[in-house]
Length: 212
Image 1 (cartoon, rainbow, N blue to C red):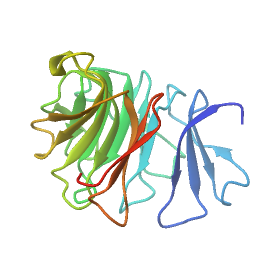
Image 2 (cartoon, one colour):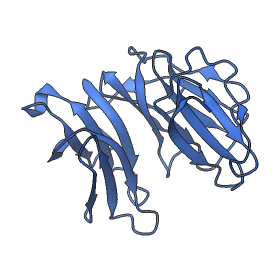
Image 3 (tube, rainbow, N blue to C red):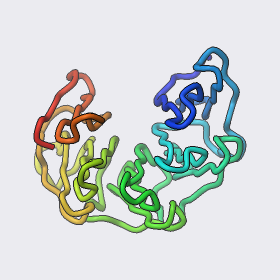
Image 4 (cartoon, helix red, strand yellow):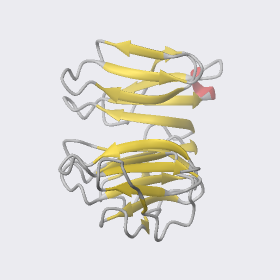
């Protein structure tokens, strides 16, 4: 494909089913372990998808962060998409993640309004304690969903340029700046050791923390 692939996700219940969210081509789905691909973008009003995730217990349900269209949800493996943006005052959403312990709760990171949270599968959104700035990645601890990490592209309130990683221990109500660095564009908890988290930094390689 000639689109820039931003995110790849594997269906946890059907390992041969793979999704690719692209920067300019929408979503593609493969049902044969990436040998062939089919567009899965009906209903999307923008084809720029900075992030994408699969519901942990209902794998037919997908969420896409879009550049200009807010958050979209699919209930049918990407065959049809519906906008879920009531309360999202910014259209540019660059990160989306699902609470692994309560999958009704969704977090969306934005360009300009920090992190928004939905408690009803994306139906409506409200602000968190991080209500401004740019968040390019979100990771929720599988061990303790109170713990959320956010990759910052810039928050004036944290001094300097505010780039790096922030941490909340109370579902996003309050935040601490834990690493001043290049912008963290990817965050991932180790699936076998939930105290370990990895960060991909823009222009500065990968970092690891053993006490997330």
